[in-house]
Length: 590
Image 1 (cartoon, rainbow, N blue to C red):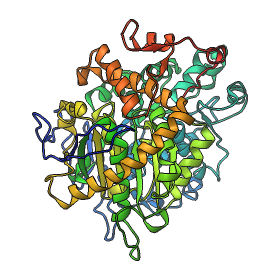
Image 2 (cartoon, rainbow, N blue to C red):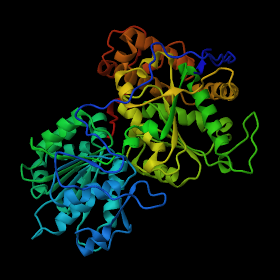
Image 3 (spheres, rainbow, N blue to C red):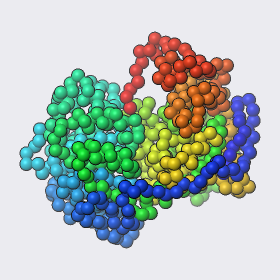
Image 4 (cartoon, rainbow, N blue to C red):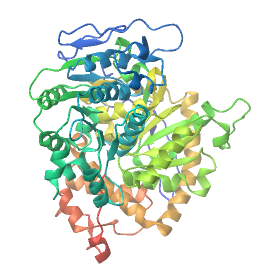
């Protein structure tokens, strides 16, 4: 495994030493499944409890590994709806779930992203609304999504099913410029499908016009939770609980979809189903149960200060790997985005880290070596996020720097590599991110870059149960090791130059990334075994060696922030009172 040991700063040259040292007590993670998980077949979806056989026929010839031989024309749905479906064959997910959903079953579905699950829940929900004897008063369909981007994508797909009907759709998310007008539109307009994020809908339910909001859902027929694991893992659990508990206590159908299924998810599904049993459907085949079957995963252990140079080296190597046939590559780097099909997603712990990395990678001295740089995170405006997502989706070659806001739901075709910088919030989040490069059965590559202190994540019980991961470098004398070391050292000098300019021209982005490091790694302190004092020491070192902070004192932190982090009284912090403008500034909801 590659281990970059030398600490570098703006005033010292970089020396890289490569060793073949494994993490202490590292054991190869094993594939394990809990007793409550269904036994899976490679050919037939698994359904619990006992229920009619919804097995798919064997796939027809050709590269249609995620399609069944069932046709939409054969479904018992209205002609009006059939006319709006542009596809001929159902995917395996659709073949396994649409008919039981049409029959009225409550479903908990395990399905990989990128396999047609949006149509799998929209089609039966819309059919049910169309077949109602009379138009219900209120909203018959509610879909909850973890992110604005996914909500918009669901709404867009729903629109394709509606042209021949008079059903209407509305999207309810945060981050808009006129929340008051949005609420007024929600309450005064007629809509049959609401696609929402839990946070904004929870605001509606608990606001001054809550009674009117409750009335809007009196006719609710179908509740859909998309990406249940993400909803529960992304800090939305409390708001999700609130929304579901405030829905009218009328009989409804529940359709819950998730890429991963844990006992907690099963318990939540049963609770949201008023304690009644649901039908559990898994469309994963035996060779799809774990992401490592499709994605070659590896890890690199490098100190925090070497993460950006190593990232740049990996980006350059992927550009070489996917270079167009006529392109020749040399050292130092001379390849650009028009000469390669490299398409990479890079995940950082927080939005502020994404902003900092974007500043570095977009600098004049670095961006000339790379494909186009795009960024997407929760602190960008909705229009900026949509623009970046569309640009990356349509690009042949690009680099998307992201926080977890883009980890799930949006389908980005052609991603050649996923790189994760720093310890993820959980093993599930690690897998979610990794899935961006294994869409619909495609092969892919994933690399995680960790500081030596973050190594315990690799050997955690959750990772052992989830996936298999190996060292990026197996021998320090290998061609790969030498190649990575060469490019890392080349880019280290460029990064040092950029950091020097950044400290002078944009210290705000450095300060924000520092505070973000404190907040995020406070949440990881247990697995890292960091005390509060150790956390602050590490953050202060991070500010100097990684972010390029040059002042004698650490970046400033506001008293309120210190209190919220539980760091009051911890030595080493530079606490300053906010300016009046900062005191009045509010943060938008995600």
